[in-house]
Length: 80
Length: 500
Image (tube, rainbow over all chains, first blue to last red; front, top):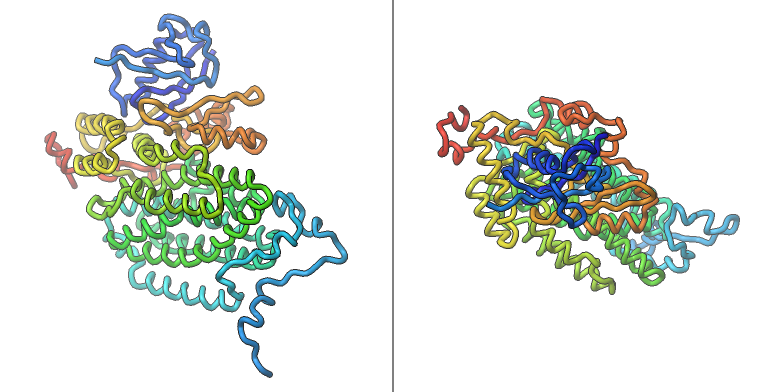
């Protein structure tokens, strides 16, 4: 099932609508949002996904991580 | 027959009320149409304004003003005159003209309601003049820009924007439909006459008209100064309305001011912020948008509030921080979604970015890396490759203001998700969420672009969405103004440069 999410990449100037599958791993969200914002922010190899202030395990699936349609997720690339 | 002195008859023409004997006052002025709190006319009978104009005087004055505008149009309002102007300024003009014409038209509707349901005859008289003013302000930009459509089809959006589902058109309609069409005369007077016209239009009438003078756009300068003389008059409606409201319901007065100041700010930041800090040639920028805001809006508005014994809006600190960065966030975002809009964007070069850093020392370093990235992509792709600096993923929009989610900073975007009756809403900022929470029934049913897309009412593919839903066809779609052919970019690669 597709799960639309509001995605915010640290360093970017706006929020984006991204759609992931409920069985996608959390790290796919980071990859998708970084790709979506790449005209404004250079992608980094490592990035973490946050939901309600908590860093999510990148290997969890979207549904296991508790993400539901229209939730806000934040992607914070690792420095360096 | 001896002629009466003006002072002996003028109030018979503009302020004449009487007691109703066959119907109740509440039936003539129902609360739903006249505004709340409903007060008997005795509470409004001292309503007055300083212009005290008769209809005959109004018509004479307006005829003179129109003759002057027409004279300027004949002298400097032709295609060849506009063709001499700086290209970035012309794109600011396209943005302004499109947002202005039908905003003024809807204000005319609000004024007409005031001309019938305003609670004192002097208010109703002034509202009638206000309606005529607003229709004049609709017609002037439509007339002037119509001349330019054959030369540049993007000017067609002066008329077209409000008739499309373009995201900026949806945002503007959401604002002005509520402000002018969906309000009673009391809220309209505070939202439009007091907050927008007294509070914000100085940005246009003083700020942009001075810039237009420096840029050499005599037609725009004359247009806005002519309009300003009307606005200065009918803006007077707001002061006696809020004075009465404060006496009877100060909490509602404060709420309406707080709500409409934020809603007005969001739109002015986009329209005027873009123009002053990005679409005016650097040499012609006397002040930054922030400096204009501080001098002509923030300080003046605080004085107005103090004069009425009102407090600054609760979100004042958020507003002050936003003045430093919000329009930069939106401009950088919109630059990368320019194909969804009807005007072209300027890429700020090294000199512009140095100026912006100087003017915005606390925030520019947060924005500049985005421009560095966009610039790098232009360098890599070479000129003319528009897609290399365009976003292809759907942006998200605020469920209150309908603008993209660009409040806060690149480090910490201020958007928040709120659940209401089983539906999730996202707001770009705390004030937008607060406005929704105060009147959820007013806003909850509205579908933003994302809602329409997810409901299958709008295409999910952004290219298709832009073309068929936003109504932006290839001949008008926004591009980089020089399509990447900037002299300062040329220094970094071996491309043909300007005109190449």
